[in-house]
Structure formats: structure tokens, C-alpha cells
Image (cartoon, rainbow, N blue to C red; front, side):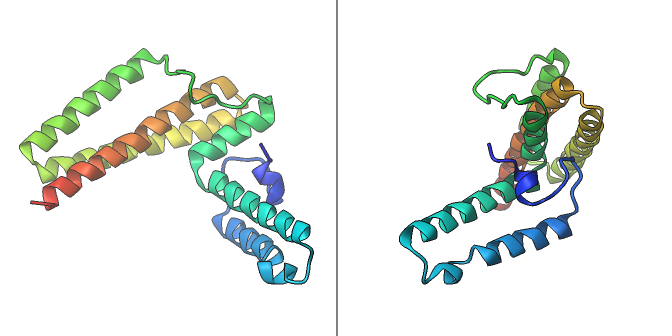
Length: 173
């Protein structure tokens, strides 16, 4: 993996200034714009296209808190996360997931918009708490626990998508 922080000349840290990130992205893309390579060789044009793709990929990593945390862990430990490997061993959180899933199914079955709104708010509060905990663990360089929290955040991301689908069903009579 290319270090996305280095590419954007940013410190390897979880909290990033989105304004600086945007400015650096625009500056990098400006230097790699195809017009700048119109009179260059095909090889140079190809390199510029690849660098532009690298910048876009790095931006996606830096904008997504899950990918950003995993990038920090990989940079610091040299170990890339294997998403194929089931690493969720937190039985308590697995039980919580099942409870949330049942709760969402019940809300969907009852077509209870108010309950769905309340459920969504509570999930976002939980997600925000996990993000804050992740930030702390990364600052403490507790890579193993931080890595486990990225799994939790992936679950929240999926759950929020499921909630959105239920919400769409409510409005698609």
C-alpha cells in the first residue's frame, strides 16, 4: 500500500483537517491534469494517469474513518488487514448486533417510522462513541484493539445501509 498520508504530506494521525485534505487533493490533481502532459510521451502520460489514480485512491482512504484507521495500523505495524479473515471475536458485540438486527426487523414489520428515527439516532450515537474510542486507541498505539473497532465500524456502516433501505420501503408505498 502506498502511504496516503505521505502522498498528501499529512501527519499519520486519525483526525485530519478536511479543508487541508481538499486543498492538497486539488493541488495534486492540478499538477497531474492531462493538459499538463499533452505534449509528453505516452509513457509520461501513463505515469501521470497512474499517479492521479493513486491520489484518488489515497483520498478515499483518508476520507473514510475505517480505511484511515486501517491505514494507520498498517503503516505503524506493517500488517495489512485481511478482510477475508473473520476477526470478530467480541461475543458481547455479536449479541448486540443480533439485538439490533431483531429490533430493525420489528420496526420494519410494524412500519413504525418514529421508532426507526429513534433507532437511527441511537445507532449514530453508538457509532460516534466507537469512533471516539478508536481515536483514543490509535493515539495510544493499541493496534489490536483499534483493529477490532474497525470491525465494529464496518458493522455500523452495514447497519446504517439496512436502516436506509427500511426507510426507503416506508416511503415506497
